[in-house]
Each structure stands twice: as C-alpha cells, then as structure tokens.
Length: 131
Image (cartoon, rainbow, N blue to C red; front, side, top):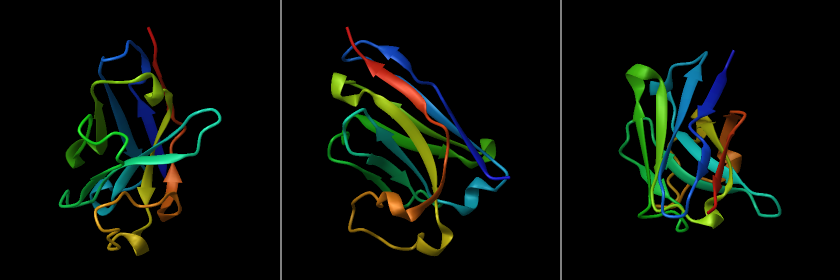
C-alpha cells in the first residue's frame, strides 16, 4: 500500500526554521520524483518545491525560492524540506506527494510541476509561523 507520512511541523517564530520529513512506504522512493505543496485556509493550494528522482531537477515556487531547500535520502526512503527565514504567510498544512511515473520526464521550464502531476499525497503536517 502506497503511503507518504509527513512530520516535522510545528509552531515557530518569524525568521525561524523548520525541517519537514516525508517518509515513503509501499514503494521505492528511487523511482519517483517528490514534491511538497501547502494549503492555507482561504488560499489556493500551492506546490512549493519538487525534486526529481535523480535530483538533477530541483524546482521552487517563487514564494519560497532562496529560503526553502528540498533534498532526498533514498536509502532512508525520505525527502526533506528545510525551511528557513519563515514568514507568517508560510503558515499552512504541508503535504508531500509522489509524481506520476508517466509524467516524470515533463520539464516545466524550471517551474514546479502542477498539482495534477502527482498521484499520491500524505496526510500533511501543520506549520504555524507566529510571534
């Protein structure tokens, strides 16, 4: 059974840092690109980062570029999202997702893949940035 489990969220002050983890179960992480998206109340869903299975392709949304870093450890079946210089507008539930195999070679010219490219998502982890 395919499962993605996020962890690492919490409450942090503006300017602080958090590292989110996404552990994959039921499939081999090496075979898939993985993305992170976030959903805040009243806001549109936003894919914030993506890492290809080979790590040759790493993309960020403009809203997080320069502050967030995505990485993966295939031996641990885990993808990470290091978030620095956090802002109140980063407050959201963060989800990791698996990109569909059939779409994995599509390059969106340096932009993050759209939400529709992903076929499985975790349950999410809450990130709250507040003083």
